[in-house]
Amino acid sequence: MFPSISLAQEIGLVVLCAAALVSVVGLGHMLWDSRFHHPEPGAYEGMPVIPTQRTAAAHPMESVELTEAEREAFAGLIRSIPLR
Image (cartoon, rainbow, N blue to C red):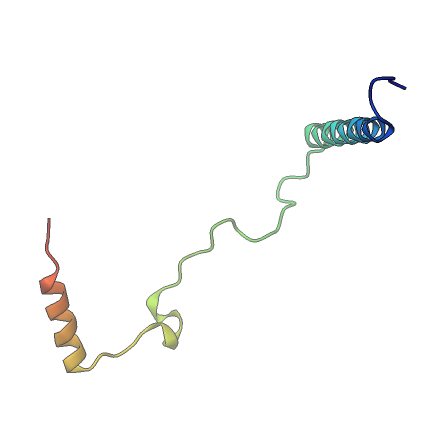
C-alpha cells in the first residue's frame, strides 16, 4: 500500500482506522437513540438515586447502651478536644 512503511505498520494502520470507524458509528448510534427514544413518564421504576436515611431506632444493632464508666470517659474525651 505505502512503499515507505512495513507490512506490520500497514496492518496496524488498517486496524486503527477500523477501530476509529466502529467507535464513531457506535457513538452516533448512541446519540441517535438518546435523541429520539423518549420513554413514557414514570416508566423507570428503579431504585432512587439517594436512599432514604434510616432513623436510629430502625434496627436494634444501630444503638448501643453505654455504661456509666464509658459515659464518663466519653465526656472527658469531649472536654479534652480544643474548640476553635
